[in-house]
Amino acid sequence: MRLDHGELRSLLPHRYPMLLLDRVDSVEPGVSLEAVKAVTGCEPCYRGIGEGQAPDRYAYPASLLIESFGQGAAVLWLLSRGPGTTGLPMFTAARDCVLLRPVYPGDVIRHRVRLEQVVHGAAFAAGSSWVGTDQVAEFGSMMAVVRPADAIAERKR
Amino acid sequence: MTAAPAFSAATRPVDTYEAAAAPLPAIDWVEVSAGPRGGIGLRAGVTVDATDVYLAGHFPELTVYPGVFTLETIGQAVTAAVGYCAGRLPQLHLLRSARFLAPLLAGDTLTVEASVGPVGEDQSFDVTARCVRDDGVHAATVRAVYRWPSADGGNAR
Amino acid sequence: MSERDQHMAELREIVAEVLELEPEEVADTADFVEEYEADSLRAIEILARIEKKYRVEIPQAELNEMRSLKAVHEVVARHAGWQD
Image (cartoon, rainbow over the protein chains, first blue to last red):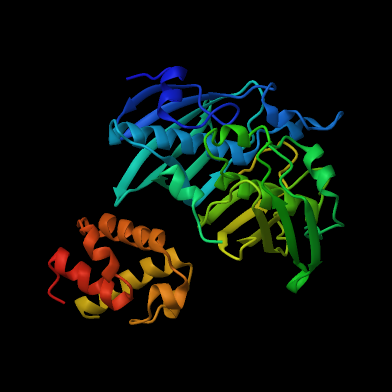
């Protein structure tokens, strides 16, 4: 099964410029998925960089790489939950994630995501990210839950 | 054998944002103090701005400061506090553990308190951060290893 | 080491890792919430690791009971069929 960008938009509540996946090339719902994220110099994370910075300063931010992988995990999980899922996926914990080399504009990242466990409404995913044959990151464990937006917005002050 | 680099003086938050690709200016202020064994202590804060371009997409129905942006705040605070080594900025290398315990919404202020270092001979250092929301709620705990990458940009294992 | 001691040692290690403590800091009867600032997500993380390690399924209703190492052991023993 393959998911184009429009299908990702209907699955994920994230929107530009925070929707950090372009396509899902293959997925076995509830088991594993391979997703693609192309990095371009047009992304707003490059808008504030000062003139004349060294080439290494254009490395794609680690925060966005981790988010992109996490969205792959969210897609994998949401597909296995089936229709009727409402709420926002919240990243609640991560463990043992290693960033191995930087990613630059022009690189195409492939996330290989495995859904390890779903326990009482919480999903645990693991996997790796690649640019060509180079591994750029390893994700030991990422945990997420889905919460209704009104439950997130409402809190004691 | 070269001596481990020592931490240098802090830069301003705006310089940190302009120095490298980043989704947003993730610190409003940062303070640095001496820590044990040549390490440092740092405090930093940011207020969640719903008009930020990335936050507009996370999510359109409700602004939630994503967990990965808490990592971005910690990363920029570390960068501002420890500065450059041979012209390079420190990079997140290993995320041992991150826990996001409470959501941060538009207008909320995040305060980070972290212990940083000392620096090892491989130019890496530990960061342990505790993050608090302005109502006193414990929002996140992060344990990570940062390092100044080698000249080829890689992080050889 | 008796089977019970072995299981307690394994569970103590899981709990300590999730709560980011040293194993010796996890007392048998200390309440996770009151003593270690655990929340419901930490409890689920502990449960997830236990389910994976011992290949058992623990009903959600039992989650509220699992508030100390000793209580965790009792719940897991019941569902994993341990004779501890």
